[in-house]
Image 1 (cartoon, rainbow, N blue to C red):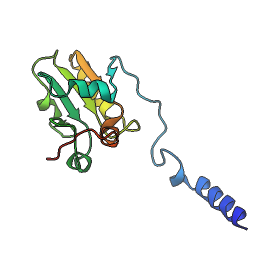
Image 2: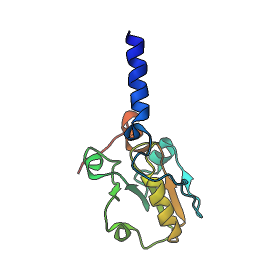
Image 3: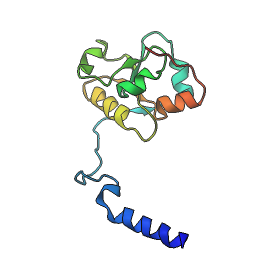
Image 4: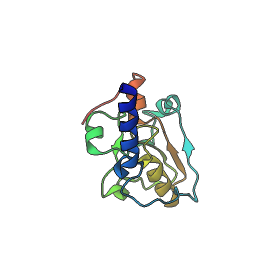
Length: 140
């Protein structure tokens, strides 16, 4: 009986449009970029932490940002994000968001690279990976 209930629940969930990935939106291909960015491990990013001229950009929503960010990181998920960019187009910039499932930092990194910045990287593990590894964070 329990097996039958599980099968019925699964069939109902799959038949319900809201249960499908991407529900409510139109299917479209994943974006392609004309720019290339470097992906950094947490260890590589940590080595750059605190070095002069290295900027960390946190591309998370305010609630995630407020719960802790990489020390010195700039909150980038704002309307006036272009004002947060350095004048020096060769400055080292490292973008991150929540985790490997979040692509906000990748989108931001490509946008900045398309604006002519040359030293742009992304840390895919994000702030959740950073915290889970026991690395230091700070709060606003």
